[in-house]
Image: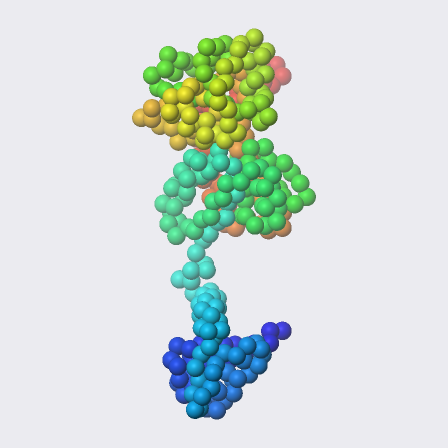
Length: 312
C-alpha cells in the first residue's frame, strides 16, 4: 500500500501551481487549515522539508520544485488512464512493437507500414533492429508483439511460422553485362569483385561452398554480416553483391541496380515468432497479413523452386 495519498498530491499540485493554500483548499472542497495539515502530512510521510514557513506563509524548497515536476507527470498519466474508456483516448490508438532483423527492417517493413497506414493512419509503431538471438529472447519475454527472423524456431516460449521464402540474388548495376541474365552462376562471377557475407555467417558459408564445388575462384575484397551494408557497397561501385533478396526488396524498374537470382539456389526464409504468453492483437494479425502478402507478391520471381513430387 502506498503511503502517499492522491489527495496529498492533489493539494501539493494545486498549491505549487497557485502559491495559495486558500485556493488549494477551495479546489479540494476543504478548509484552509485542513489543506495546510495535508501538506504537512505529505512532508512527514516523505521525510523531506517541502516548504519553509515564515510569518504564516509557505515557500517551496528546491526539493519541492523538483518533486513538482514528477507530480505533474504523474497526474498527466492519471488523466490518460481515466480517459481510457473514451474512443479518442491516446492509449487506445492501435500500436505495435516489432523486433526485426536489419534485412527486413530496411525495406519490407517500411513498405508494409505504408500499405497498412492507408486504412489505419493512427497506427503507432516501434520498430527495433536486433540480432536473431535477441529477437527470440525479447519476444519470448513479451517485450515485442512479434519478431521477424530468417529461420523461426519453435520453443516453449514462442510460436513460429514461415511467412515467405526467397533466395540469394546477385545485385549489380543495371548496365552490367550480366544484368540481363535469368540466373547467374558462380562461374559467371569469376573475375568479378564480389561483395557478400563472411564465411562465419551461414549464408556466407553456403555461397563459399557453391564457388568451391564448381571450382570457381571467389574474389571477395569486402564482406559484411549486414545485408544493407552489402547493398551500399554495390551502390558505390565496389563490385557485385550476393545478398538476401529481402534486403533489396524495394528495387523498382527505375532503380540503378538490378537483382538476378543466384545459382545454385540458396533459400532465404521470412519467419515470424510471437510470444506464447500473449495472443496477437487484431492490429498485429492484420499487419502480419500485409507483410506476408507483400513479401509473397514481390518475391514471385525470386523464390526457390517448388519441391518435386514423386512421379513429377
